[in-house]
Image 1: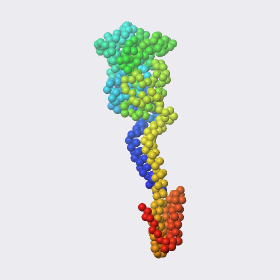
Image 2: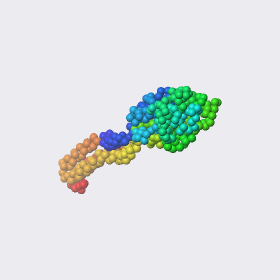
Image 3: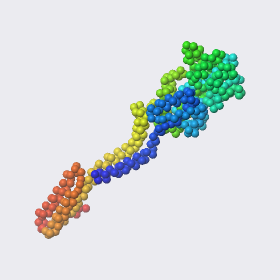
Image 4: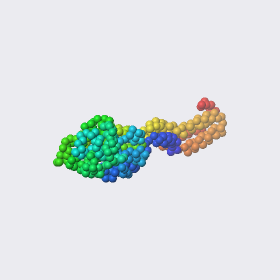
Length: 433
């Protein structure tokens, strides 16, 4: 055992040092909890955040949902590291936001609904320049997109065309004729959208220039609201309507753990891949239509799908195996030649314990042969017996016992040989160098 340890403990030390060095280059384990900035309570963003939280909890990741005023606040929370993940309306990100924030892809369409009273007589978005136009509350995504559209259509838009009214309040004002038009960035199921689609004397404004607008803003997309998609029986709308829509994105901080990014992408696929009234199955999630950079993990996911390990193991197990595999490669590369060299070194160390005695044995044989008197020869034989006794205390593995007994028989042979020598037969053996 001592010889075994003497040979293999250096390997253990090398393995430990290699492990320490490798750990410096291995990703730390993913966090057990994240903060998800959603939107106002009861809204579509909040509902989606709840679905994400439930699905991620099944994989052992706790999601803390943070209610917010909307996409503008969500972008701010991500940039100052108060949130890890957030739903963001497409088209609102500034170029500098890409320094801290990335997108895991587009998730669903958010149509930009513009309802106009028929009595006002608007046929194009530019006709709303002199309307009493509610474009959303200050700081809202609806207002930010409306201001972008007004800039794109050019000209001066007075304050009356930029009224800070939104949601149900704006819908009620439009029905009561307090305003001429109102804009909303919302899903098709929003109560005020459903109400206005059925309201008498109010029409949904089309965007014939939607394809051109989408070329100016990557996170915007032309969207055709199909005839009857709101209500087939009532034939609402009564014809196809070309609209402009934001593509809601899943924003994340750049320093979010790649394993969490991968899990979010899998959850996004479960939540959004089934399609909706506005998008066919499989259209979302997508790496296109984003105005924030995609991380490497998202690009890999959209190209190759889930990793091989995630197809067969849970999130926790797959992540452990991926990290262990990265750690094992350099260690195996280092240890393989060392392990191959260890057995020959071990055999050499054990046999050396036996063969080292042959030098003493040969020396005593030479002294005995050179002795000219009986007393001198007996003195050498006494040394041989002492040598035999020392060799008897030697411990070697069972597999090397034959070498040990061969040595002991050689000592006995030399002892017997010296006892049979005639004192007159003394010879001088050559010195062993």
